[in-house]
Image (cartoon, rainbow, N blue to C red):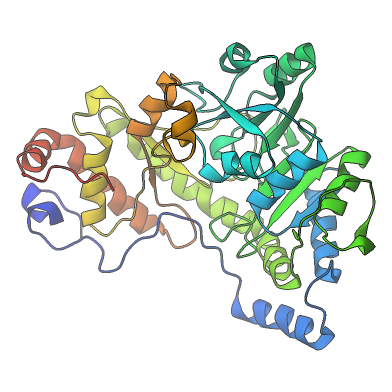
Length: 404
């Protein structure tokens, strides 16, 4: 039922719009019959890990889909970044955004590197050559860009800058499977790219990750590093780790890849409806994607400015009261999280700080039907129309707006 008055809102005593929670993330489960067939095959073969046939099949499929020479499947996206850093033989400082998932930066720390935070562009939410250049110093060895929301992270500008300074460029592409830059699939940018096959990604192995590169030597190092056993030696790397993908992960990812176009097309239909409805939301910008490129439409992100009259946290509380599990993504910036706040607490990143106050992810994925999307839009319509009354109601409470 469409809510059209304040009294109907859950914050004002009405029942929630949804009886059960509406998840914010992708959960792309395969049909049970396909899952059963795939896992029966694994059990009958009795081959569960150590670079099995399903892993090899997945690597070949990713290479074809992304148009790269090498795909190296690993345990998860964070391990992928750790292995990438080691495969590049980095030593020193790596410039990275603070407006990203903490695992992006933590992977550098685990790899023995020192992150240096740079601000992001207010329109793309990613690093650019202009934001990175002032942060380059004598110990800078690389830049780690993030294709945030699946949008390419200034590949031309960053590559030109890195070449000028003789430093390496690699990418966290966790959001970007199936997206393109200059008409080509993301996967071959920089020296190496890292993808995530986490359960909430459009290609899901329940867990998992993948590295892609067109450099034979880097690929050989990555394949060696991911295997703690000497039998899998393709290059002289020194330190190794157990970063292998299991056959179960590969099977799930293969099934997800089989249905990639279906999930992408569904995401696009829901995203398009959000786009059509968003002009009515005063002070609320729906983050959009550049024309002429392919996208996976995995994320629907709102940014609230001062004209919205409701803060991001107030809109978040309203939606959560209706059982819509929207989330602040990302909040806070990684530079404000332990242990980095102790080392980088004085770093000034004005755009990052602004985005951390203003951005909100709303639901997308196979469980979000057109009707559910309409009802979410209706609630944001009402919040926008009645923003002053809602703000007064929330701000008069002694506890204020929760920060969790």
